[in-house]
Image (spheres, rainbow, N blue to C red):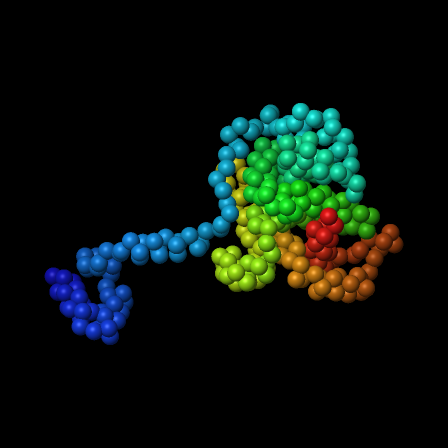
Length: 319
């Protein structure tokens, strides 16, 4: 009874003046339990649309619902992770997996335009990462095909061909004499994964364009490394899709460490960070000790991630 009476008084107050409406709204919002019987006008269509837009702002744009998992299982995964009628030709091309000379265009042609899935599967097999981190082949291929489908084929440069090239270049750099045996399996996993996702859902325009046009992405990421933040968000979000969590058997600590490293590496692909990356790396190399065999001694996270950031950045620039 009291609430009904109070509601009538508040309604009357709100109709008296603008200030009365504000007072009424304050009392209603602050002191009344909206779950109870107080009569509050139902939202208009405009209010509902506004609320819907507000809810959508918390979602990561660019993530599509795809179905690759239904037809995949460990027994149906082909030799190179993709279906091909040119297995011998593809095998010949992948003989250069550990060399700079690999022809990524031929790999794309022989893999039904699945260069990223094919290259990543080959690298993970070569480095025995599937076994080391207990990643099932079907989950891995499902994730990679989903990731590859989120690269835009109509974008001339930042497409899955580029991602495959960067992943393979990172793989080769990790095997150079000065860095071989320097990094842990988890660091290697993070670097190759970072290379694979580093441009996913790229729209084909620059950060500055997105900022200048007040795009939704620029607003979401506050004009700071807009695309790089988006690539990370999409890459990690896709792990939540059905049968896509390739890191499900990592420990909580491993997963947290991997995520931190991947974020550091992908953010470093922002070209506006190029000069500072270069300067910091030069300073570190000039002051670091090396072993008698010429291997860098990297004994803390800061130094190790600095080399990994520059490595993925170099791979990104190398093609």
